[in-house]
Amino acid sequence: MLKMDDIQKRLLLEVADLHDVPEGAYNLRANGTSAGRRSTQNIEIASKEDGTGLDITIKDGTVNQSVHIPVVLSKSGLTETVYNDFRIGEGCDVLIVAGCGIDNCGTQNSEHDGIHRFWVGRNSKVRYVEKHYGSGDGTGKRILNPRTEVYLEEESSMEMEMVQIKGVDSTERTTTADLKAGAHLVVRERLMTHGEQRAMSGYHVTLNGDGSSADIVSRGVARDRSYQELALKITGNAACNGHTECDSIIMDEGKILAVPSLEANSVDAQLIHEAAIGKIAGEQLMKLMSLGLTEQEAEEKIINGFLK
Image (cartoon, rainbow, N blue to C red; front, side, top):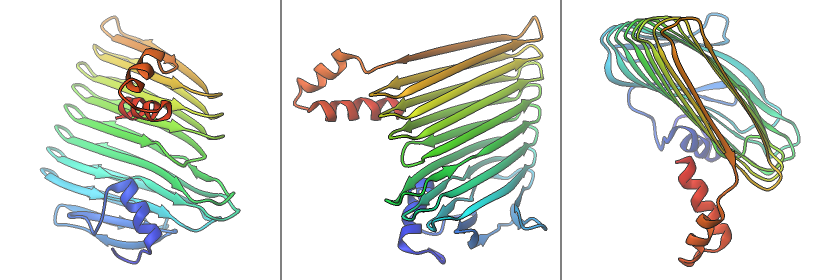
Protein backbone atom coordinates (compact mmCIF):
# COMPACT_ATOMS: atom_id res chain seq x y z
CA MET A 1 0.00 0.00 0.00
CA LEU A 2 1.15 3.53 -0.69
CA LYS A 3 2.46 5.74 2.15
CA MET A 4 0.50 3.96 4.90
CA ASP A 5 1.50 2.32 8.18
CA ASP A 6 0.02 -0.93 9.53
CA ILE A 7 -2.78 0.79 11.47
CA GLN A 8 -3.85 2.78 8.42
CA LYS A 9 -3.78 -0.34 6.25
CA ARG A 10 -6.03 -2.12 8.74
CA LEU A 11 -8.49 0.78 8.71
CA LEU A 12 -8.47 0.75 4.91
CA LEU A 13 -9.33 -2.93 4.90
CA GLU A 14 -12.27 -2.32 7.27
CA VAL A 15 -13.86 0.55 5.33
CA ALA A 16 -13.01 -0.34 1.73
CA ASP A 17 -12.10 -4.06 1.71
CA LEU A 18 -8.72 -3.16 0.22
CA HIS A 19 -5.60 -5.27 0.80
CA ASP A 20 -3.62 -3.45 -1.86
CA VAL A 21 -3.84 -0.64 -4.40
CA PRO A 22 -7.29 -0.96 -6.03
CA GLU A 23 -7.88 -1.38 -9.72
CA GLY A 24 -9.21 1.62 -11.58
CA ALA A 25 -9.30 5.18 -10.31
CA TYR A 26 -8.57 5.91 -6.66
CA ASN A 27 -7.61 8.56 -4.14
CA LEU A 28 -6.35 7.37 -0.76
CA ARG A 29 -6.24 9.89 2.10
CA ALA A 30 -4.46 9.37 5.42
CA ASN A 31 -4.27 11.87 8.32
CA GLY A 32 -5.28 14.80 6.13
CA THR A 33 -2.85 14.19 3.25
CA SER A 34 -2.81 12.21 0.03
CA ALA A 35 -1.48 8.66 0.28
CA GLY A 36 -1.85 7.90 -3.42
CA ARG A 37 -3.96 8.78 -6.45
CA ARG A 38 -4.66 7.47 -9.92
CA SER A 39 -6.97 8.72 -12.65
CA THR A 40 -7.91 6.63 -15.69
CA GLN A 41 -8.85 7.37 -19.27
CA ASN A 42 -12.53 7.72 -18.37
CA ILE A 43 -12.33 8.86 -14.73
CA GLU A 44 -10.46 11.98 -13.67
CA ILE A 45 -9.72 12.79 -10.03
CA ALA A 46 -8.48 16.33 -9.37
CA SER A 47 -7.95 18.38 -6.23
CA LYS A 48 -10.15 21.43 -5.75
CA GLU A 49 -8.31 24.68 -6.29
CA ASP A 50 -8.92 25.77 -2.70
CA GLY A 51 -7.64 22.44 -1.37
CA THR A 52 -10.88 21.46 0.37
CA GLY A 53 -11.55 18.23 -1.49
CA LEU A 54 -11.86 16.48 -4.84
CA ASP A 55 -13.59 16.88 -8.19
CA ILE A 56 -14.29 13.48 -9.77
CA THR A 57 -15.45 13.49 -13.38
CA ILE A 58 -16.71 10.34 -15.10
CA LYS A 59 -17.10 10.49 -18.89
CA ASP A 60 -20.24 9.53 -20.80
CA GLY A 61 -20.53 5.81 -21.49
CA THR A 62 -18.16 4.65 -18.74
CA VAL A 63 -19.19 1.12 -17.69
CA ASN A 64 -17.82 -1.60 -15.41
CA GLN A 65 -15.33 0.77 -13.77
CA SER A 66 -14.79 1.87 -10.17
CA VAL A 67 -13.63 4.78 -8.03
CA HIS A 68 -12.22 4.32 -4.51
CA ILE A 69 -11.86 7.38 -2.24
CA PRO A 70 -11.49 6.07 1.35
CA VAL A 71 -10.14 8.16 4.25
CA VAL A 72 -8.25 6.92 7.32
CA LEU A 73 -7.23 8.82 10.47
CA SER A 74 -4.76 7.43 13.01
CA LYS A 75 -3.73 10.67 14.71
CA SER A 76 -5.52 11.86 17.85
CA GLY A 77 -6.79 15.44 17.75
CA LEU A 78 -7.06 15.65 13.95
CA THR A 79 -10.19 17.37 12.60
CA GLU A 80 -10.94 17.80 8.90
CA THR A 81 -13.76 18.62 6.50
CA VAL A 82 -13.60 17.59 2.83
CA TYR A 83 -15.90 18.34 -0.10
CA ASN A 84 -15.99 15.73 -2.88
CA ASP A 85 -18.05 16.39 -6.02
CA PHE A 86 -18.91 13.58 -8.45
CA ARG A 87 -20.10 14.41 -11.95
CA ILE A 88 -21.22 11.23 -13.69
CA GLY A 89 -21.95 11.46 -17.41
CA GLU A 90 -24.76 9.82 -19.39
CA GLY A 91 -25.01 6.10 -19.97
CA CYS A 92 -22.58 5.10 -17.21
CA ASP A 93 -22.51 2.08 -14.91
CA VAL A 94 -19.95 2.55 -12.11
CA LEU A 95 -19.05 1.59 -8.54
CA ILE A 96 -17.97 4.27 -6.06
CA VAL A 97 -16.45 3.20 -2.72
CA ALA A 98 -15.93 5.79 0.02
CA GLY A 99 -15.90 5.45 3.80
CA CYS A 100 -13.75 6.53 6.74
CA GLY A 101 -11.90 4.70 9.48
CA ILE A 102 -10.59 6.37 12.66
CA ASP A 103 -8.15 4.84 15.14
CA ASN A 104 -7.84 7.07 18.20
CA CYS A 105 -5.50 6.02 21.00
CA GLY A 106 -5.11 9.51 22.45
CA THR A 107 -7.00 11.93 24.68
CA GLN A 108 -8.19 14.38 22.00
CA ASN A 109 -11.18 13.94 19.72
CA SER A 110 -10.59 12.92 16.10
CA GLU A 111 -13.21 13.99 13.55
CA HIS A 112 -13.83 13.62 9.83
CA ASP A 113 -16.72 15.43 8.11
CA GLY A 114 -17.22 14.40 4.49
CA ILE A 115 -19.58 16.23 2.13
CA HIS A 116 -20.26 14.21 -1.02
CA ARG A 117 -22.34 15.55 -3.91
CA PHE A 118 -23.41 13.44 -6.87
CA TRP A 119 -24.75 14.63 -10.20
CA VAL A 120 -25.83 11.51 -12.10
CA GLY A 121 -26.48 11.84 -15.85
CA ARG A 122 -29.35 10.40 -17.87
CA ASN A 123 -29.58 6.61 -18.10
CA SER A 124 -26.65 6.11 -15.71
CA LYS A 125 -26.37 3.61 -12.87
CA VAL A 126 -24.27 4.19 -9.75
CA ARG A 127 -23.59 1.85 -6.84
CA TYR A 128 -22.22 3.75 -3.84
CA VAL A 129 -20.72 2.08 -0.74
CA GLU A 130 -19.89 4.09 2.38
CA LYS A 131 -18.60 2.35 5.51
CA HIS A 132 -17.62 3.93 8.83
CA TYR A 133 -15.43 2.26 11.43
CA GLY A 134 -13.71 3.26 14.67
CA SER A 135 -11.04 1.67 16.86
CA GLY A 136 -8.41 2.60 19.47
CA ASP A 137 -8.32 2.54 23.27
CA GLY A 138 -7.86 6.27 23.89
CA THR A 139 -10.31 8.51 25.75
CA GLY A 140 -10.65 10.86 22.75
CA LYS A 141 -13.81 10.41 20.71
CA ARG A 142 -14.12 9.14 17.14
CA ILE A 143 -16.55 11.46 15.33
CA LEU A 144 -17.93 11.15 11.78
CA ASN A 145 -20.46 13.55 10.24
CA PRO A 146 -21.17 12.61 6.62
CA ARG A 147 -23.42 14.67 4.36
CA THR A 148 -24.59 13.36 0.99
CA GLU A 149 -26.46 15.14 -1.78
CA VAL A 150 -27.79 13.23 -4.79
CA TYR A 151 -29.21 14.67 -8.01
CA LEU A 152 -30.59 12.05 -10.39
CA GLU A 153 -31.39 12.97 -14.00
CA GLU A 154 -34.09 11.22 -16.03
CA GLU A 155 -33.98 7.41 -16.11
CA SER A 156 -30.88 7.29 -13.88
CA SER A 157 -30.50 5.23 -10.72
CA MET A 158 -28.38 5.02 -7.59
CA GLU A 159 -28.00 2.25 -5.04
CA MET A 160 -26.48 3.30 -1.72
CA GLU A 161 -25.06 1.00 0.98
CA MET A 162 -24.43 2.91 4.23
CA VAL A 163 -22.78 0.91 7.03
CA GLN A 164 -21.62 1.77 10.56
CA ILE A 165 -21.37 -1.12 12.98
CA LYS A 166 -18.38 -0.53 15.25
CA GLY A 167 -16.39 2.03 17.18
CA VAL A 168 -17.86 5.42 16.18
CA ASP A 169 -18.70 7.53 19.24
CA SER A 170 -20.78 10.19 17.51
CA THR A 171 -22.23 10.56 14.03
CA GLU A 172 -24.71 12.85 12.32
CA ARG A 173 -25.57 11.59 8.85
CA THR A 174 -27.63 13.79 6.51
CA THR A 175 -28.70 12.57 3.08
CA THR A 176 -30.83 14.44 0.55
CA ALA A 177 -31.86 13.36 -2.94
CA ASP A 178 -33.69 14.99 -5.85
CA LEU A 179 -35.11 12.67 -8.52
CA LYS A 180 -36.35 13.53 -12.01
CA ALA A 181 -38.69 11.47 -14.22
CA GLY A 182 -37.98 7.75 -14.26
CA ALA A 183 -35.13 8.01 -11.74
CA HIS A 184 -34.74 5.40 -8.98
CA LEU A 185 -33.01 5.49 -5.58
CA VAL A 186 -32.37 2.51 -3.30
CA VAL A 187 -30.78 2.93 0.17
CA ARG A 188 -29.77 0.17 2.56
CA GLU A 189 -28.47 1.43 5.91
CA ARG A 190 -27.01 -0.76 8.69
CA LEU A 191 -26.13 0.74 12.05
CA MET A 192 -25.02 -0.56 15.44
CA THR A 193 -24.19 1.52 18.51
CA HIS A 194 -22.91 0.52 21.94
CA GLY A 195 -21.54 2.10 25.11
CA GLU A 196 -22.47 5.79 25.22
CA GLN A 197 -22.47 6.23 21.43
CA ARG A 198 -24.93 8.48 19.63
CA ALA A 199 -26.01 8.16 16.02
CA MET A 200 -28.32 10.54 14.15
CA SER A 201 -29.38 9.64 10.62
CA GLY A 202 -31.68 11.72 8.42
CA TYR A 203 -32.93 11.17 4.86
CA HIS A 204 -35.05 13.52 2.76
CA VAL A 205 -35.88 12.33 -0.75
CA THR A 206 -37.88 14.48 -3.17
CA LEU A 207 -39.59 12.71 -6.08
CA ASN A 208 -40.11 15.39 -8.70
CA GLY A 209 -40.68 13.39 -11.90
CA ASP A 210 -43.32 10.97 -13.13
CA GLY A 211 -42.20 7.37 -12.70
CA SER A 212 -39.55 8.21 -10.11
CA SER A 213 -39.20 5.98 -7.05
CA ALA A 214 -37.32 5.61 -3.77
CA ASP A 215 -36.88 2.60 -1.47
CA ILE A 216 -35.11 3.38 1.83
CA VAL A 217 -34.56 0.65 4.44
CA SER A 218 -32.65 1.21 7.70
CA ARG A 219 -31.77 -1.48 10.22
CA GLY A 220 -30.26 -0.59 13.58
CA VAL A 221 -29.19 -2.15 16.87
CA ALA A 222 -28.78 0.02 20.00
CA ARG A 223 -26.86 -1.69 22.82
CA ASP A 224 -25.75 -0.65 26.33
CA ARG A 225 -26.69 3.03 26.89
CA SER A 226 -26.38 4.17 23.28
CA TYR A 227 -28.88 6.34 21.43
CA GLN A 228 -30.11 6.27 17.83
CA GLU A 229 -32.34 8.73 16.02
CA LEU A 230 -33.65 8.12 12.52
CA ALA A 231 -35.68 10.58 10.44
CA LEU A 232 -37.00 9.40 7.08
CA LYS A 233 -38.92 11.75 4.81
CA ILE A 234 -40.18 11.32 1.27
CA THR A 235 -41.86 14.13 -0.63
CA GLY A 236 -43.85 13.12 -3.72
CA ASN A 237 -44.49 15.90 -6.24
CA ALA A 238 -45.52 13.71 -9.20
CA ALA A 239 -46.83 10.28 -10.16
CA CYS A 240 -44.24 8.42 -8.11
CA ASN A 241 -43.65 5.60 -5.64
CA GLY A 242 -41.88 5.95 -2.30
CA HIS A 243 -41.22 3.43 0.49
CA THR A 244 -39.33 3.79 3.77
CA GLU A 245 -38.75 1.12 6.40
CA CYS A 246 -37.12 1.33 9.83
CA ASP A 247 -36.43 -1.90 11.74
CA SER A 248 -34.56 -1.63 15.04
CA ILE A 249 -33.49 -3.90 17.88
CA ILE A 250 -33.18 -2.27 21.30
CA MET A 251 -31.04 -3.87 24.03
CA ASP A 252 -29.89 -3.16 27.59
CA GLU A 253 -30.55 0.55 28.32
CA GLY A 254 -30.42 1.72 24.71
CA LYS A 255 -32.82 4.30 23.28
CA ILE A 256 -34.19 4.65 19.74
CA LEU A 257 -36.31 7.38 18.16
CA ALA A 258 -37.82 6.84 14.70
CA VAL A 259 -39.45 9.81 12.97
CA PRO A 260 -41.20 8.91 9.70
CA SER A 261 -42.58 11.60 7.42
CA LEU A 262 -44.48 11.40 4.13
CA GLU A 263 -45.60 14.39 2.06
CA ALA A 264 -47.78 13.93 -1.03
CA ASN A 265 -48.26 16.93 -3.32
CA SER A 266 -49.76 14.95 -6.20
CA VAL A 267 -52.85 12.77 -6.30
CA ASP A 268 -50.76 10.15 -8.09
CA ALA A 269 -48.03 9.95 -5.44
CA GLN A 270 -48.00 6.57 -3.64
CA LEU A 271 -45.98 6.70 -0.42
CA ILE A 272 -45.60 4.05 2.31
CA HIS A 273 -43.73 3.92 5.61
CA GLU A 274 -43.09 0.94 7.89
CA ALA A 275 -41.43 1.01 11.31
CA ALA A 276 -40.73 -1.50 14.09
CA ILE A 277 -38.67 -1.28 17.30
CA GLY A 278 -38.36 -4.17 19.73
CA LYS A 279 -36.11 -6.50 21.67
CA ILE A 280 -34.79 -9.87 20.56
CA ALA A 281 -37.57 -12.44 20.83
CA GLY A 282 -37.11 -14.93 23.65
CA GLU A 283 -38.08 -17.88 21.46
CA GLN A 284 -35.27 -17.03 19.04
CA LEU A 285 -32.73 -17.14 21.87
CA MET A 286 -34.15 -20.38 23.27
CA LYS A 287 -34.02 -22.10 19.89
CA LEU A 288 -30.37 -21.21 19.32
CA MET A 289 -29.39 -22.03 22.90
CA SER A 290 -31.03 -25.46 22.49
CA LEU A 291 -28.49 -26.05 19.71
CA GLY A 292 -25.60 -25.53 22.13
CA LEU A 293 -24.97 -21.77 21.92
CA THR A 294 -24.57 -19.61 25.00
CA GLU A 295 -27.00 -16.72 25.46
CA GLN A 296 -24.32 -14.24 24.36
CA GLU A 297 -23.44 -16.34 21.29
CA ALA A 298 -27.12 -16.60 20.39
CA GLU A 299 -27.57 -12.83 20.67
CA GLU A 300 -24.57 -12.18 18.44
CA LYS A 301 -25.79 -14.64 15.82
CA ILE A 302 -29.24 -12.99 15.72
CA ILE A 303 -27.74 -9.49 15.49
CA ASN A 304 -25.31 -10.47 12.73
CA GLY A 305 -28.14 -11.99 10.73
CA PHE A 306 -30.32 -8.92 11.29
CA LEU A 307 -27.62 -6.52 10.08
CA LYS A 308 -26.45 -8.67 7.17
